[in-house]
Length: 105
Image 1 (cartoon, rainbow, N blue to C red):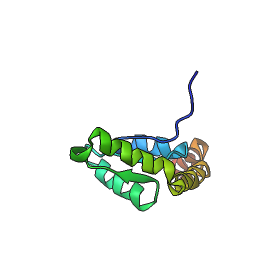
Image 2 (spheres, rainbow, N blue to C red):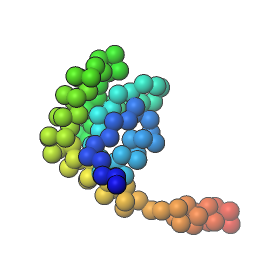
Image 3 (cartoon, helix red, strand yellow):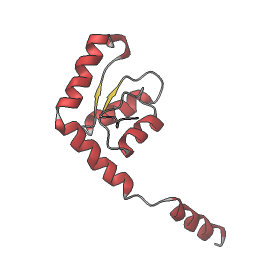
Image 4 (cartoon, one colour):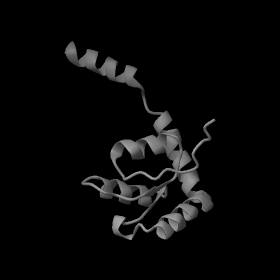
């Protein structure tokens, strides 16, 4: 039996951040590559993530940061708000419509 996640701990790539937000999950982001620091900073500014530098990511520091994300409802509230925004985006059918329009012009 699987249990729903309460938070996510991605490395900050666009796919993992978008996936977490599409499920309304707050995050602890530990950026490791090129674009993750930008994604991490944006998540922090939106109130959906805490950011921890990889060099400072001791077990104690990770535990403390995750605990704060889980205990402060503002992270979950912000992530759920963005989940709603993502859900309201048009689906692939909109892209098909636009591509057809483009092909006929």
